[in-house]
Length: 299
Image (cartoon, rainbow, N blue to C red; front, side, top):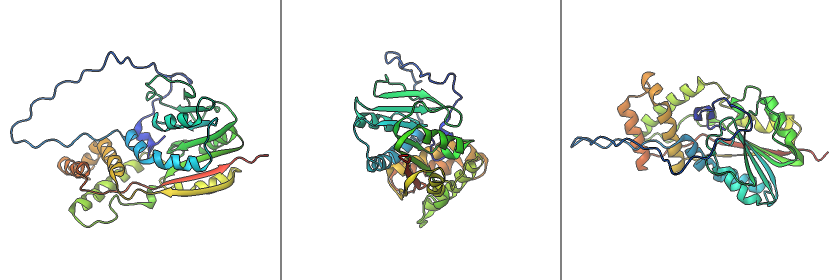
C-alpha cells in the first residue's frame, strides 16, 4: 500500500496474521486539549495537512475503479486487495460484488479497519512478501503502491498470480516519480519555484528510504515475464487539482522536520507553501500512477 512511497504511511509488524483490531468504542471519543488563545495581530497558522492515506485514496481510487470496471467487475466476483491501506476502495468493491461476492483486504497494518467488518468484506493481517495467499480462485487481485517496497518482489508476484483462478485478472499499480521530476512543470513564479525546491527535497528524502522510483514503467514487462496474457497498461497523471494539492501537502507535512534540518526550506517557507496549497492558488502535479493488468492463462 503505498502510498507514493507507501512506507511513509507506516506499517508496524503484525502481531498475529489474521488478527483484526477491535472496533473502537464510539461512546469514548478522545478528548483534545483546548488550543491556547492566539495573541492579537498574530496570523492564523496554516491548516493541518491531511492524512497521506486519505489524500492518496481521494486522488487514486477513482482511476483505480475505472480500470477495475474495464476488467469486468460484476456481482459475485471474488477480489483480493493487497496492502489495502484503508477502507475506501475495498468498501466500493464490496458494494459492487454484492452478497454473493467476496472482498479480502490484506495489509501489514490493519489498524484502519475500525468499523464493524461485515460480509462480503474480510480484513486480514498479511505480509505479501512472506505469507501464503488468503485463498484461491480469485477473479481479481489488485495491488497498489506496494511492490516497490517489498523485499522479495518475485515472491509477491508469484503469490498473487497463484491466487487467481484460470482467467482471473491481476491489476498492479505503481507510481513512477522519475517521469515527473517537478511538482510544478510550469515554473512561472516564486510560489512555483519554492514548490519545486521543496519537491526536490522531498524526493531526496524519499530516495533515502529505498524503493524503485522508476518501477511503474517496468510493470507490463514484469507481468509478461510471469506468464500473464492479454497484458495492457496505462497511466494516470494529475497535472493539478485539489487531490494532487492535498497529497503534496500531506507529503510535505510528514517530511517537514527533515526538510528543515536538511536545509531545503525554512519553517516559514514551508508554512507559506502549505498556505498556497490550501488556498488553491498553487497548482501542483502528482507523480504518474502506472497501471498494468493481465490474465492468468485459462490452461
